[in-house]
Every structure is written in structure tokens, then in C-alpha cells.
Length: 431
Image 1 (cartoon, rainbow, N blue to C red):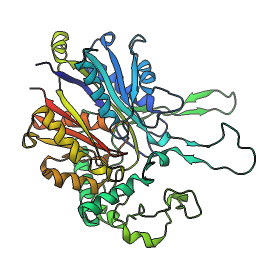
Image 2: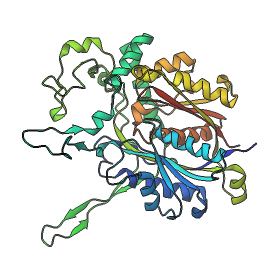
Image 3: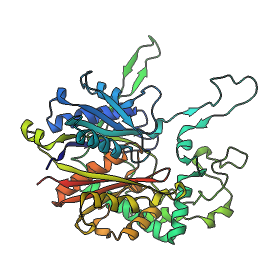
Image 4: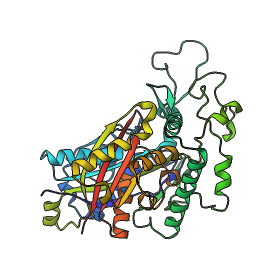
């Protein structure tokens, strides 16, 4: 049986919003991962057939960011590359697209991954292209717009409120799930569980000497650990209780006098909406920055080239649902993928499901009958972060590492997707 092997898995540490990675362009983060994945896998760089990566907030200075990052990483110019965008599942879609090309006989070695720097997604001035003429105008937050569904005109957090209402999930259940995510991720980080996955990022600080106008390199910072995890376990429950549920405010997506005031990091909304909602910033994933990459290679060719597989990409499938209930989509995608692969749910050892919101995670966990011992055992996106274009690849890198650490066989990776979709991939540890 033909098999598609996974080798050279790597990711950057995940940076908190507007913190350590805010000055590191997304293409730079991806190029770092590409270089390390090539080195770790041991593939001949000139044998790569295609480069594919996921990205959502495509930088204006790096159109087709995959191609830009590949060239920055030293991939030969003759090797082509393209970018895929399936919102939160873009990094996993890169792997799926490579599998499709491999199955169709259109290549045997693929460099794949995903990247996102949410801190650098720009504000834009709408209408400036054709002329503003006269009067005031406004800036539109490209990131805020990307977190709002255009079909139902609801932010992703509001769609999570719809899911928790449908499945009867309480605020206390969500906060407890979020606390557990931080606890598991903190313990994993302190035990060094993530160290083998991570390639540190060197952030160069440039300054102008003010005299000659020349720019110089100041102190270079080495960023090597995930920084979204809340390690203050003694006070974490108080933080959960203090968080404000703001997504029920109907004005949150409107540009009007009733628009929430985010000045100085404070959120001011009508308190009458507090009691109606249960989804908060604490029991949701934080905005974040990061990248990941790996090599997908035909298993027979890997043996021929002496490339040691870490795992195998078995199969994948997808499913759709209503955009207003996007968080429940893994409930449908995961069984479809397992049925395609002829793997019973009970034979899956680990589930890495993206924690967009605690409420939708609880709904998926309970609907699928997944035990806590198998779910996001080193913490999830609520603690680690969710750099949207990279998350599918990051989860896959993490799943491979956990399978190796615990000597388990099968892992399922799945993400809900804005717009009402989910993608699911199945990974098998190499024996």
C-alpha cells in the first residue's frame, strides 16, 4: 500500500498578540520553519516537487506568501509554491492539498506548513483607491473584519454563543475547560514537552543612530517559548470569573456611536448584555502569531533516500454546517475522515482538536464521546494560541510529537472553520 510519510516536523513558539513576534513578518516565520524542516528531514532540497502553506491574513508585501517564504528559505527558484486559505484549517489544508497531488501522481516530496502574524494584519482605509473627496473617513480593522462572518453578520464569538445555547453548555463548564487547557499546557511547557518541536526565532532590532542616518542592529532577542500560556495557576480561576462576555452585544460588529470602546485596552459595553452571554476572552483562544512546517514524502522514496519518517498522513475529510454554528462542524468531519480511513473511533489514541472556544470544544467532545484523557493532552489553543493560518500545521506537529512521546498509534487533528466548515486529518505514528 502506498503511504505518505511525515518528516521534519517543526514550529515556532507561539507569540501573544502584539508581543514578542509582532515585528516578525509571517513570511519570515514560515521561512524559518521551512529551513528547519528541510534540515531535519534530510531531503535533498532540489528534489522538492511543490511547496504549499496556509495563510489567512495575506501580507500586502508578500503576495503568495508561500512562494516568498520558500525563496527566503533557499528553496531553488525552479520549485513552485502556492498558498491555500481555508480560514482556521489552512495549515491542515496545505497537507491535504499535498496529499491530493501525491495521490494524483503530481509529486512525491512536498514542503508544507502554515503561517500567521495576527499582530501585523493592517488597518485599511476603504474608498481611498477611488478618491475620498471631502470630509472625514475611518480606518477599518482588517483583523476585526476577518473575525466576522459576512453571511450571518456575527463575530466568531457570537457563533460560539449559538453553539453553547444549542448544546446547553454553561459558563462554569467553559471556564473549567479553559483552566484545564492552561494547566495542561503549562505543565507540558515546564516539563520541556514542546522543546523538540520548536525552532527559536531570532528577532533583530534595528535602530537609527540619529546622526549619519545609518541603521544598526541592536540587541537580538531569541524567542523560544510559547508565551500565551497563563502560568499563574493560583489566580487563573479568578481571571476566568472576571472575564466579560461581550459577544452578545448586537453593536459589536457595527461602526456606530454604540461601538465598544477599546481604548487603553479597556472594553466598555452595555452591562445589560453581560448576563446574556457566556463566551469570554478567557474561555476563547487568544489572538497570536506563529508558523509551522513539515515534509510530506512518498514512503517508498523516503526509504530510498534514507529519510526517517516520524509518522504517516493517513487520510483526511471535511464537512460543512451553518455559519452561525461553525464550532460544531468537527462533529461531522471527524467521523467522515475515520470512515474513509476505515478506522473505528475507539482505535484513535489522541485527538488534537483546535480550541477556538471552550464551548464548541465541549460540544464536540461530548457529541463524539471523546474522553478527556485523549483530548488535547498537552493543552490546546485556549492556552497556546491560535495563529489562524498556521494552526492546522501546528496541531499536526504537536500530534506527531505526542504520538512519539506516548508510543501511541493514531491521532486525529481537526479544526472548526469560520463560515461553517471543519477539516479532519488522521496521523499514524511510524513504527
